[in-house]
Image 1 (cartoon, rainbow, N blue to C red):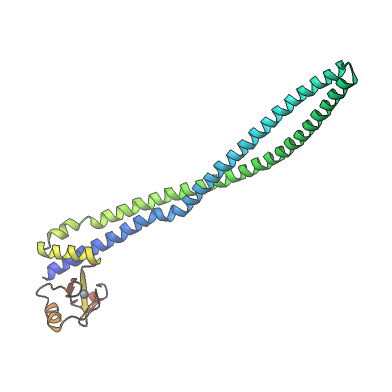
Image 2: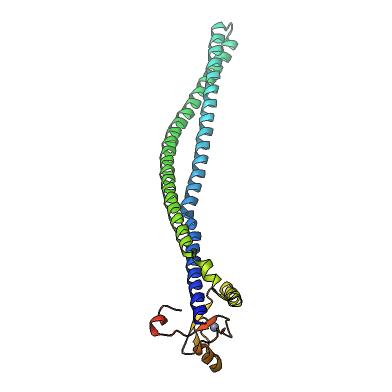
Length: 242
Ligand SMILES: [Zn+2]
């Protein structure tokens, strides 16, 4: 029984360590998640910014086309003025010239403002692009680091579980089944009894059961939590078992 108990504890050590390593492995991607979310958000904002600039640029080009057409119309109006045969034609042509001039002037003022806005917008975009590039580089270097960490952890897990099959093979089948069932449900399967109290669920054992556990002739289960119970033999062991 002592040998069985020793193997069970060994198995539990392996399984507990493996579980801890697995948990750490699962947490690794989560550590990068906030930075990745930031990057995604900023990259999305950049796309919008670029689109807005392109829209403004298109608007500016459109306005310049209109100005060109108006300049053309102005030229025609001036020609008409030259060819005016009477005061009525003259008046109409000169009104048209005034209107075109005003319209061209106003539109050119607008275009000038848009030029300024575009310049500011481009400078902002460039600085935001730089920020995003920096963040991306940071995330990528972190990812590389985490990949190394994951590799190390996987290797640790492999090393820890290397001897598991041998340990398992040495354990009595029915005992192994009890171990697996409790382990799955409780996270620990083999626990110490201290002062008649199960250290798994912290309930007192019935006196008869406590005596049986102390004798160590059979492996008993806690009536409350079903964990497999043992009483450590010497005090040195007591501190490391739980
Ligand atoms: Zn218990």
